[in-house]
Length: 445
Ligand code: NDP
Image 1 (cartoon, rainbow, N blue to C red):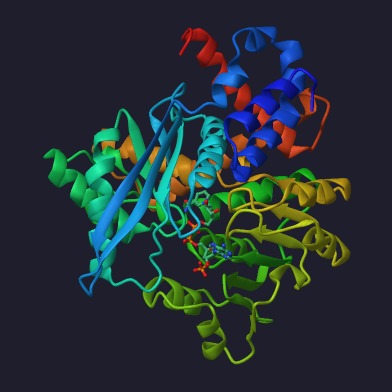
Image 2 (cartoon, protein in one colour):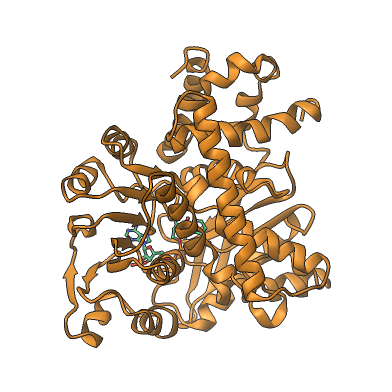
C-alpha cells in the first residue's frame, strides 16, 4: 500500500473495530489507488479517501414481527447510505442470518465504486436484516417485509435512496416491500425500489441482469486474450438469482456449465446443467440443489463438497463473500482454469486473488463484472421516471453495451496506470476518479 494511504487505513481499522469484511473491502481499494494521488494531488488535499471511507448515514433498527405460530420474533435491520456524490443512494437489501454491520458496510462501500463504473447517476448504499427466509411461509415473509418497511420507508425515496434485492430478497420480497411503502406514504412511487414484478413497474431483464452482465463482461475479458466462451467448461457456484442467469447466458454463448451449488453442496452434471430443471427446483419449488440430481440421471450431488475441485476452464463464483480461497485458486490453476469472474460480491479472498493474478489468470472483480444488475436497476428507474416499458431485446442490448463499456474503461485505466490487464487496479482507479471528481466539485460534503 502507498505510504500516504497507510495512516488512512489504520484510522479506518481503529474507527470501525470488529468489522473484518469492511476492512477487507477498504484495503483492496486502498492497495490500488496510490498512483492516482500523484496525478491528482487535490484528492489528497480534499481528503476524498477519508470521506469515502465514512458512510454519509448509517441506520440500524429493530424489526419485530409475528411468526405463523403467534410467537414474536425480533430481527435487526440495516441501511447504510454510503455515498451520494453521483446520484441517489442505490444498492440491494440482503436477508440472511449472517448479516451484520460489517457485511452491510463492505457491500455498501463496494457499491459506491460499482455504481460509478456503470456510468449511470447512482450513489452507493446497502441494507438488509439478519432474518433467515429459509423455511418461512409466504405470510411470514410478508409480515417481516412489512415490519422492515415500517422503519425503512422514512429513509428512502426515488430521489433519496432506492433499494433493490440481494441474497434472500427477490421479486416476492420486493413486492411486499413496495406494497407496504405505497400504503405508508400514499404515493405510487415506482422508482423507490427496483427489481419489481413486471405487472407493477418492473423492468424486463432485471432478473437476468447480474448473471447475463457477468457473462458479457467475461466475454470481453476472453476477447482481450484472443479467447471465447465456445466449448469452454465452466463451473458456477451458487444457484440463486445471479448463478442461474450466469449459467443461462454462458450456455447461450457456447460454454458448457457442468456444476453449480448451494450452501449444502454441489451438483455435477456431465451433460451440462439443464436450465428447465434448475429453474423448476430453485425458482418455482424453492428447494435445495440436491433435488436436481433426482431429476437428471447422470447428475451427481456432492453434499458438503467443494465445487472448485471440479475441473474447469472458467470459474464464476456467484454465491457469497470469501467463498473461493487460496487453496481453491491453486486447484483451479492446476486444473487448467483460464478465467475467473466474480458474480458475487468479494467471493475471492485477497490471497486467492493474488494467486490467480500471479498465474496470469484473467480475473474480473465483482465491482466491474457484476455491475450489470445495478445498471439494469438504473434502467428500471429510467423507465419508471418516464412511465415507459422497454422490450427485452432493447434492454439486453443496453446491458451488453454497458458491460462492454465497463470492460473498456477498466482495461484502458489499467494500461494508463501501468498495470495492463489488471482489472482490480483498473476498476478501483476508474471508479475512484468518477466519485472523487464530483466530491471535489461539490465542496465539503
Ligand atoms: P440468492 O439469494 O438468489 O442466491 C444466493 C446463492 O448463494 C444461493 O444458492 C445460496 O445457497 C448461496 N449462498 C448464500 N450464502 C451462502 C453461504 N454462506 N455459503 C454457501 N452458499 C451460500 O442471491 P443472489 O444470487 O442475488 O446473490 C448472490 C451474490 O451475488 C451475492 O454476493 C450478492 O451480493 C451478489 N450480487 C447480487 C446481485 C443481484 O442482482 N441479485 C447484484 C450484484 C451482486 P443457499 O440457498 O443454500 O443459502
